[in-house]
Image (tube, rainbow, N blue to C red; front, side):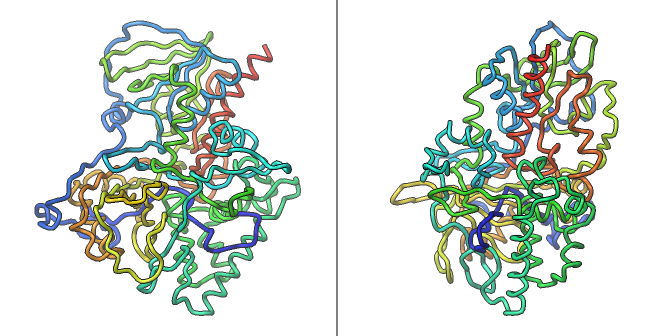
Length: 554
């Protein structure tokens, strides 16, 4: 993940996702049986709820439900559809370049997408992405944004950044429960036989090799944003191979190593190693080379609300252009612009928005429903699979301390468990005494094909989810259940794009990025194939820059 010698304690979680055990209609996940009876007595004291993105709005699009007749027409030069990081980044870039005649509409009652967050009386907490790592130093656009927001405070004489000490993850950073012991770092080490430890070391030597390698075009084989990666076929052909097959071909068969690499894929992509391409699997480790004066390579940057903090910084620059609870339902190209039918959830009214151009910062499965009579040649929507996942924000009044080894860290993972662990949302707090804390648990629902996992997830009740979350927390912290005050669950049905074999460098992604009629532009992380803050940030800029360039060319 960096250009420095590998330090396994610096390899951390790169994203936010989860994994399941569930049952519905005879579909079994991870051996977890669905309890038919009422709430268990030991859970009676736990308060909370199960929420997620606006299901009603999603069903309206999916089922093409009838809407009220359009009541009026509004005109705008540029309409941005989608208020996630990509849409907010596009809006910021337009405004930064002197464009002010634009609106951003978002179907939820909030902006943020996967960077959305929640809060309670104890703390803010993430409902999705919860951190970034040191930015590659050549990524000037993102470096500038982080400097504007004081994530980067200043630079030394050589131009290396100083990162804000309050945002760099406080020690201790991460630990792994393995063989009955909490070890430092999440790469398996405690109790690992020497033969398998050597195999782990050999894998990271391969990582270092790929990390510092450039293709015949002079570009790094793996980079962020991914479209800055080398086009050399020697490396791109890895996209046509599953990560599991790649590892087998290189003689990696250590159960500890394979568990760790599977964990990484679940964590970053919401899918098992067998379900992602070898290119994406190696990109996890080989794409980051950021350096800083005051931080180690691969250092994480976070806030109690996770990437919601970054989202708020983007939003603050364009807040007067944003309309929430507004859903684009129908988009039609016309000779003089684009006509968009917009439904306002808050008033149950529909109106027509006439724009010169539109940026669709919405996922492609949504675009498929709203692009009326618009054929995107070469785009095969069936090749785009989105991983479902669950997040549980657990408020505890105490964490049992009868643990062996490493104390509570920011990132806490258990070997061999369904989830990818939990983060301590209060890690960055500077309070001397914390009576309560919120821990954020991530569970990717990836044991079955995404559609089946999604259907199963939607049938599960709040109490039935507790039957999955609490037993795993008990394995990590025996006796924790009486100390749980509150559990807020958030279910993402379409969490993020999964970089399946052949997708990242395949024809569908290539064509899906192309504008339509020089009036429709696209910006979303599913156009990268990898769901990272950096990718969303640049997708938004790229789409906005098309519009800026068109203006200058006219």
